Length: 271
Image 1 (tube, rainbow, N blue to C red):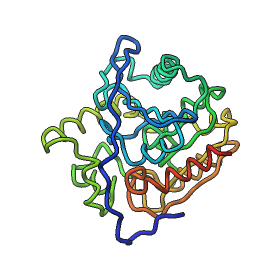
Image 2 (image 1 turned 30 degrees about the vertical axis):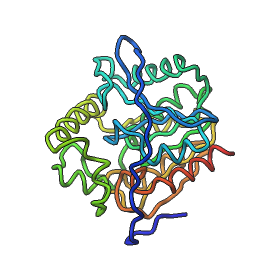
Image 3 (image 1 turned 90 degrees about the horizontal axis):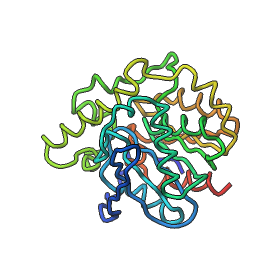
Image 4 (image 1 turned 180 degrees about the horizontal axis):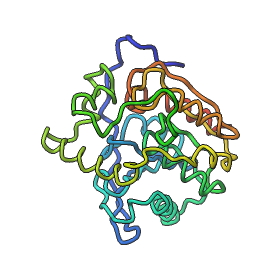
């Protein structure tokens, strides 16, 4: 069901937990969390929301085995010079799946991770059982342009991510103010190494035709970072793509509406 704006939000639960684990991939330590049982899901995070097992992860892991790695330079994963190449990061995740013993997986990504999930699926369509993109970056902008995340002050960034939901600030702030600011700077730097110029992929819309798996794109009418128009174009470019529209304010939909997003993804994976 769609999320209705201006409704009293449900209390945020912080009780779910998954112990961080690590593997060495390409001589770099990569941190990941996993939980649940069933079909394997590779979850690729967006800008922030690292170093934790989210209520969204918990909702998915009730019926799936969720693997949630932290990209090089994000969270506690070590940065690397090859992490500046989309192709190398995609290969990096393929190698991680090999080390974990997963061949074909359901691929889920949000924001920057949605862009990366789309790149993974176009590179490895045979390893992609389904593809779910939540407010994905990467599409060449149309007439409606989202805000530039690299030009936002801290308060503006928080507003763009979670809207008027101060109860969700805990998802964005990791540690004290100084530690959180340093972590945000480090992760934005890692993101910039991939998407500074250009901040979209001109070829992505065409390449999405390679993805034959069932696909879902989740967007919101009130996302200032990824306009709904870009989500519509993602869905239209995927041969078996559908669009699921939320009415939530903010970009971090996996934090704002974890159960709604998880349920929509689980419905897709059940096809």
